[in-house]
Length: 231
Image 1 (cartoon, rainbow, N blue to C red):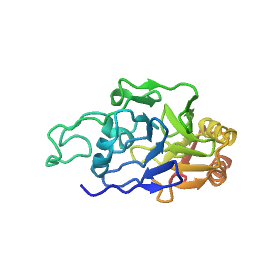
Image 2 (image 1 turned 120 degrees about the vertical axis):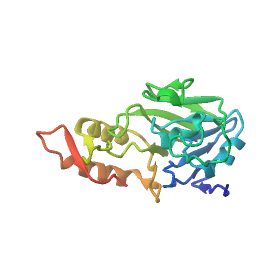
Image 3 (image 1 turned 180 degrees about the horizontal axis):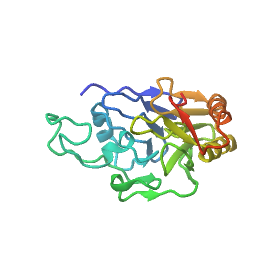
Image 4 (image 1 turned 90 degrees about the vertical axis):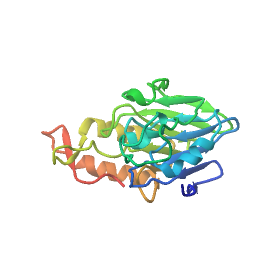
């Protein structure tokens, strides 16, 4: 495996960038006094050595249930999902270790032992962490992670629901309105957006883009059709 690339945001926060083949989310890394905290675990083989090297005291926060964010939380075999039949890392590789996993609803079989988050949870570990449920169009049970009231990992929360059968992606008007109001209410000034090569974005820029989409809604429709995500 190639050496994992870790990008530093500040003295406390860093992340592993996303990749496209296989589709794998960014992985947020926050260093507390007692624990290391991960926001998502991705699905890239390149990240496995790093993930396996983390202590059992690691705490994981899962942004939502899509497999590019959750893949290494369960056991998989060659030929499953995005893995090719000739993958030879192991015939059966173990899930990564964690002392605790926080997840929203609709997480399914990926995290059967997770602590389900239905309202805001605050953790103080030499760093202040707020795990925040978000109402989003992209996925039910989405969570955000705000660090020291300033930086917030949003995962895919700003993106539309994926269209199927050649239908365009779309936002639910009410959920988009709720998300905009939630983001406005939070003190964070910077956001981390998964699958975005720029990753760190000013929150006011993200809000301006979301509001632009919302302002183009059709009063007669509960949905806003959209061909590309907010990035």
